[in-house]
Image (cartoon, rainbow, N blue to C red; front, side, top):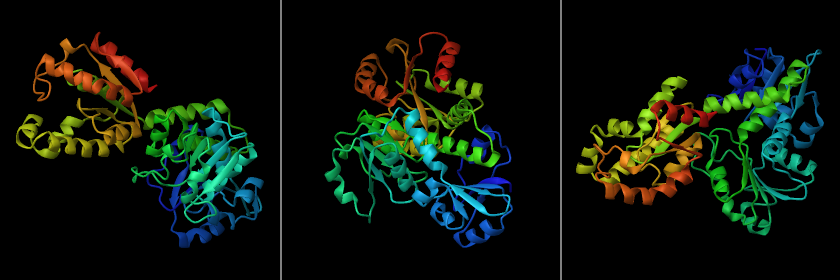
Length: 406
């Protein structure tokens, strides 16, 4: 292995694809159990490594020399084997975190920031904030400042999640609900899988400016490549890599009234983009072993909604899909969160008189449709990132929906 990533569990890493976008198509993943770490670093046949959970602090002790940032934070995520065979450790996470904030328009100078998590990434975030003139407060379960002290810092304007809480596959967790900080203006989450954690979605709902960890991942990788290759990486190359990776990961999710054309549009989009297509109603029928009208007639709407929530939770964890939803998918808050987690959500609208109603138990007539739209329109808008009117040709609608992903 010339260049690659070491860590304990790497099954869902984006790093090989990311480094390919930055010019290295041979980047490898090397999962390592803890007991093999020191031997690998000593004898491993590599030129450069990135390091992830849980070895960032352990690796620092194996390096003959450290950058100032790595020494200050006690955390190493990039290792280079020098000509004499010794290891040099750096913390490119610091650069990545700084650029994540900068690209999102989040500044630290003169502002109090609560940083959740006392591991290497939390210490790195505190280092960056302090260097930028901010006032970081490290919050952890057993440190000087704990979660019991949050109310003492209600004046904090910035909240940083540097814990793994909310990371795939345990995506339901939130280390601290942003609503605890009434003056919150900005939120940053180092997690990049999912793209929009529940933590970030709650902060967005408060109107906070938000930044997710994919940006940090990309910028730290670019700085690592500079150390590996000995040459600068053009910032526009980095931005293009992030844009491509984000587009490849993001699900295209279509919500809207029953009969608005979500399935037809979704299938065409999936075919055009060479992506897998899922219809939540089809998945519900597959799980139930019967069509939706029978589920409603024999089991009731509550059973249908429970199945719908299970399906959406599973699909929401996926990446690079096109998902068409049932008309009532947005009714439950957890569904909206899960659809947005890795999704770019498009609200497909259509005049009521043009909605298809055949085989739809809850939308059998004009009055029922009108009431339904009044009840759901605000939920569709709250869930959606964009709105597209399905009022022209199918081709026009498909083009406009796909444009929202780019």
